[in-house]
Length: 417
Ligand SMILES: C[S@@+](CC[C@H](N)C(=O)[O-])C[C@H]1O[C@@H](n2cnc3c(N)ncnc32)[C@H](O)[C@@H]1O
Image 1 (cartoon, protein in one colour):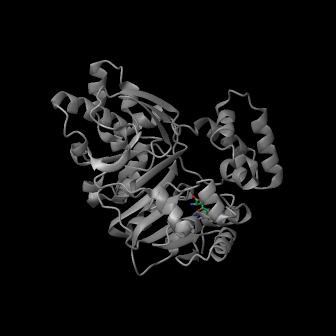
Image 2 (cartoon, rainbow, N blue to C red):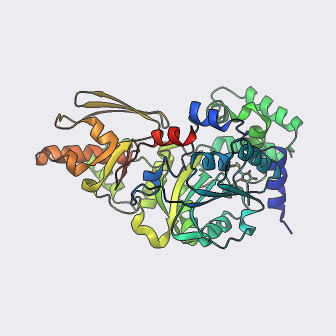
Image 3 (cartoon, helix red, strand yellow):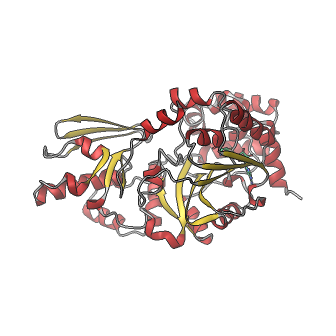
């Protein structure tokens, strides 16, 4: 017997399938470059910085795959096996349509509460974005992921943060008090109310920026404003919940929540020292508050026993890493100076390396270790250089891996032709 939470979710996502389904995978993917940040190829270096890139067949589970996520990932990663599970029959119907139209052979679908589906084999990789925060007890989702994950496996999880959504959530509470239903009348009422808000009301700003696209269709309005069950997390509380389920953050999938030192470049030494001395969870709590870009918290997690592979909990060995351009970040090079525009986090950096003994392409194309890049540097040059690299990595404007980083864009165009 399904509980109310699951019945509500099934009904909502059947009547209002979300996201608005992609109609043409090839066009969407190639022309609009609508890739998923959890993609096992494109983001290999971020998912597995400790492992060399390879195309070994992975078993991937997508828990709560929605209307197109599983088909997109399967189409773009023909070398891996995918299983998608969703409560919404209508969302799965659309996934099936994409499977047929695009002759996808590496995706199996299940219609169920993912927690009720039993598998004989465990997975290398579990993806679940925008799903467990809708459960009465999100911990039950994490427990299931751990039980169905191979020892060395990883999980991509996206959950809502509780900072940026705060003001919008108050408006949502009001809609709840008014007992709005998931129907056209309520959708119209919500949209009219949002339109009438003062332009500087945080919920209006949120609506005009973060969820602008979603508000162009009914399912988006229902998913955002009329959801029956949502949990919003502080990163510190989510880490506790992961810990209860023997999971740990391995890496951040983007730089929305993690960057910290960029806020303290001009701070007095005692403040820098104070922040440096804090436990990682407290640092992340400060980053979440200051970045405030936490509508979505995108995490890559693994079993707690694999803490050694976490780049969040371990010191990075800077000499051994290969560094790479960060997705969504633009770089303009002028001599020894680099201007960096982080479009996702609205950040602009102007860094002068004061050193012409290296080419910026060497730190942006993932082909050389930093030890190789700095081989002709004297001690001071080496120290200055590494400090800049540390700053870039800490603030998610430079990516890295312990292995050479492949040119993934090329990979896509080859596989999807
Ligand atoms: C916000 S949508 C996200 C869809 C997809 N993950 C994506 O990122 O495009 C949430 C989806 O999770 C599904 N879902 C929620 N709880 C679920 C559960 N316990 N088992 C299976 N699917 C679930 C819903 O039906 C819905 O399709």
